[in-house]
Length: 333
Image: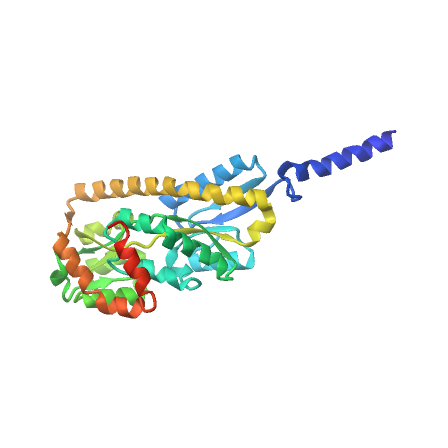
């Protein structure tokens, strides 16, 4: 009798996890998420919110450990490669490197494509944006696009006032190592400078190596660049969203039911991250304005001039996607 009871106990102990999620998978699994931004950054806060929702909705069957500040992978390209081979489960990355697998993502990065942030989110939450997310998994890259996060708009900041494109002539502007961005500045009459790291921008401006740079509000403030380049023009030339990625291997690790829960939780964190980004932007703006920075909002005519100068760039980088570009530009009109 004791032997029968012992066998029954073992059977129950083994089967309870199976019945717990109805998939035949083990009852609990710990997954990893890589984030290059620091603690307290809007995307990092969203990562933790994602982990919290998943643990809650799966009743503890799925736990996600968030590693911020690049402690797992210091570069987003490295985290993408880790996702592909199954060494990592989730990563928050910019849409830029993901365009290597879904070329259409290059379109949503074109300069002066959006009228404002609301326009961008209408596109990303609509058919175009959602189809791009689906194409990530369909690309055979081993990646799955879960949702978009906000990264704000990139704006120019300089040592001299800039209103319209005519004020950009001859200015040396630090840029990311991106040919399209270099072409953008040259079309505006400036000179694009690459090879300067984000931590070197302040000294490069102070030493006169460059006349300015471009980035979002939080970076402008947190890096202290506003002290060296106190003129900030809200031209919003690019709005490149972030993407929360998963490795396809996660699907097999958690089973069908919990995979659906994970996808739903990711979608929910999108609005949360957008809210956190708005708060961070406001805080950064208030700090630099209080420090004496001059902020200029271009007129509609000036913005139209910025955009019109991009025609050659659109022809080169938007080739083959003309209909999509037109659809994006007309969204919400």
